Image (cartoon, rainbow, N blue to C red; front, side):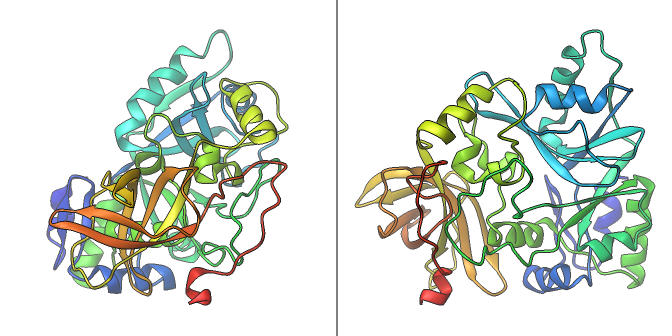
Length: 359
């Protein structure tokens, strides 16, 4: 499957991440959220791990407890460096014979290389499943594709052994229905042909991103900048088991959660909608003219308008009025707490309604 197949779909616009949109990203968001459309995810790659020791091996080298993972149950894992920073993230689902990992395409080779080096004498065989691709949408929408395996996103439910930092109730991702089907690559050609005939509705990655940002859902390609701790983006919620055995970076994970606070924190930003220009990922976030963080993800949501995720210093007051740099100046940004400044096991955090409800 090449990008040329989707280029034939009416209105399709493609970029380096694959299908960006089909002329109306706002409508595509509604279609995705309702289950009326699916999204081919060319920026995802698929790896597999086979062998009798696969689950216990992955358990021993990543942040997630996997030894008792049941076939068909979706979870996720992080690979951390010795200082606890996020190096890789993977969505995980096992079929009883192989463990399938959905990863960011640009980081797949590096993760596969690292996994191969970590095999030692165990009965495991990590492989690139290049003959498979990923299609996203609601669970019902991707189930209709007839995929052999579907990963259902556990976000934002706090997994067994995890910990949620967000003080906002209800969590903005609570109603989000998201799943990713692992399909033979030929399925993409079939989807493109069906879309050309008008038999299937597609959505691009702009719509996928908007729904993810609105749900405060971190992604390695966006929120992991090489020094990100999982605590900083509320990733203990679904990707870390705090009571499992030792793994690389575990000491930092335990120390920050039990004894300290993460040095930075994720915030959700409601951007000034009067300006048609959106900031780019990496754009500085400022407080009284001083740079205090950076945009990690940005989108134009079909209900909330221009929104973003950003990582800022822990010292930034939760009620501070922030600005974000754009090409011709700055725009105002109202912050919403995703990770509070005193996040940790001992924190006593008041529950807050959504910013939209407070308004």
